[in-house]
Amino acid sequence: MPLALSGGYALDVFYRKLQEFEQPRFFLAPAVLIVAFCGYQMYQLNFLHYDDDKYVYVYTHTRRETLVMLEQIDATATKMKTGYDTGLAIVSPEYWPLPWYFRDYKRVGYYGKVVPTSEPVIIGQTGQEEEIKATFGEQYQQIDSSTLNDPRIFPDRNPEGSFSLRPGVDLLLYVRRDMAKPSTTK
Figure 1 (spheres, rainbow, N blue to C red):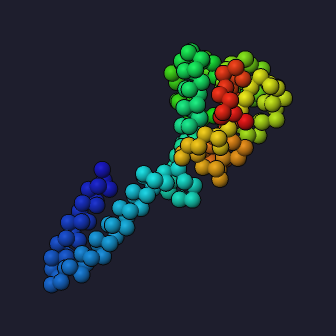
Figure 2: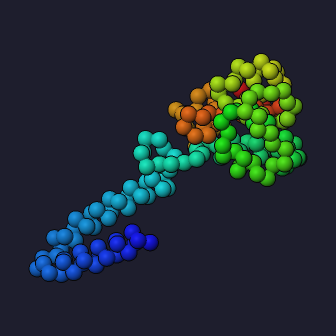
Figure 3: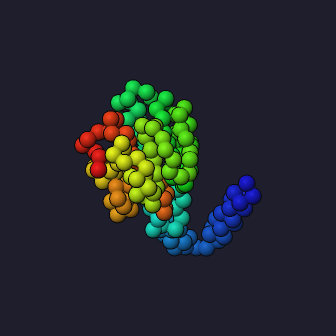
């Protein structure tokens, strides 16, 4: 509130000073250019590049790839006809804000490490891939993000067919073989 009042006061002072000059239109052109440039940047950051790390003003708690992963989990739950009763095992030590996205699911375990489980869906981190394969063997298939052909998937930031949660956290999605779709698996 104080900044809004100060800004309004500053605009009023500027407007009154501008009226004192004989040629105020010389100040109008730079003002229009500045507002147009700031508007362009605002549009770019808020609507197009809201999760792009090369822009310093961007803050995002999740990336677009996370939404694709959630859709794959929902599709698996629909295929199983279990809906929000589908069991999920989150074995990744980094999982926030997944509890928010899985708030409707009733059987979600956040373990933070690889543990034996028989849940139909397992989410792990890329650094845990070998341990997950060793623990679960051939029981689970990885859903490979690179085969989904979704425009929200960026191949340059999704190593090993992972789903990027946030910068530095790439998740792997595993679905029990009897539930996985063969065309989208690795």
